[in-house]
Image (cartoon, rainbow, N blue to C red; front, side, top):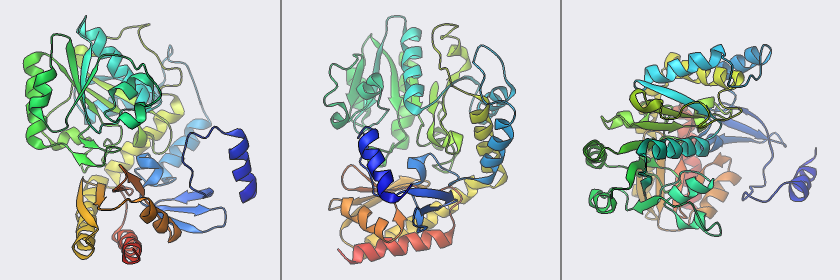
Length: 391
């Protein structure tokens, strides 16, 4: 198809649920994407965080090719080896638990809501935080602490109380005899790269233990080494009762998962929850390849090293350009808060061959692949500086 044919097909045949960037990509490798004109772009927001290994990582590609020639799909009332191996791997690297497989972060969070309510036996309220984001389904929207995503979809499911992020007293004030859980992102992605405080997280864990509440960690975006640890909770010295994963777990392929502490994992028994395509053989092989790549290619160490380097480069820009308000984040999940709206900066970066994101109007979101190099960071910083220089 030619460029205009692609645009016409989208206009005539696909629902307009996304704000589109007029680029048609046809190939990707590592931190690079090529468009229909063979123009190369440096991708510092690969797959909205889904491509932690970059595009088309060879280990993921090989695993998928091998599995797709043997068995693509089998329903979850049968057993298959890739799912058994992946669940074992996930539990080994996290905490004693059991896993439920699904297809997305929203699905994983919905599963967490259902398990919490069933566990609560009448307790059903879940506390969430301002500027959080938990998904697009109705219950996930109700949990999300941003009104803009909820507009037009009332009435939303009841049972969610939203309080100020990093404010323990605000949490304590809304706990009632109906409260069953507290749901937390350790780094709020869509909310503007806001990082949970160490003392706040430790206090939340203690509060949950005292009140017999479940601590739910939404690690849909922070999981799989994004923050310098395999899972973000490991930065804080706490263990959640439930953890939800998706995005980069599949190396670019769709998968979601809920990891539940073993002592409460059987709360959801046969017939209480399901996901037809959850944990299929092909997807599980891809996810196993992601774990393998992170370990064999020492990507945790590279994430920490490159995060330090990228923070240094960005802080140099902050010192030079007063329109930068703050640099914040954890690992390779970084926000550049501006004093002006960021949309035009993102557009100008794209024109110069750099793909980044803007969230919360004024926060540039930068999340390169875990195997990013200094050379690629230098190039990205140079492009961003040239754009800032022109404003």
